Image 1 (cartoon, rainbow, N blue to C red):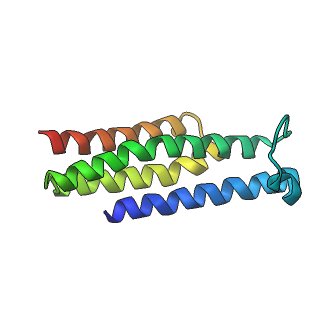
Image 2 (cartoon, helix red, strand yellow; image 1 turned 90 degrees about the vertical axis):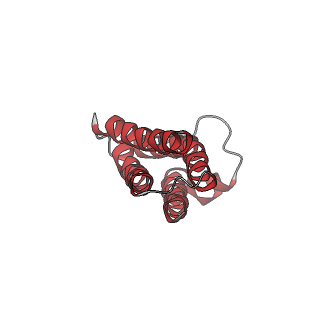
Length: 125
């Protein structure tokens, strides 16, 4: 559960970083507007917005994994390690995407996915 809380803080950091870069690009008034049309965003802002979307997509399966582990009483050293590996992968994924770490970004993403999958398998087996 602590890893799940840490993931929520990573999400808040992703939102904050993405929003700060967006405000830097289009200003406070532009950020408060509906943001219709071409925003002419910097590469960093576009990457952070995609990283945030990816993070949002990956939180759901991780939440499911945590709930399954908890409800099936499958807590173990292995599931704890997998949960914290997911947290570390998500924390590294944001700068990896923002700064264009190729191919590391994809490997970091895969590490988080494997960790989540291992947790689900531990709960089901």
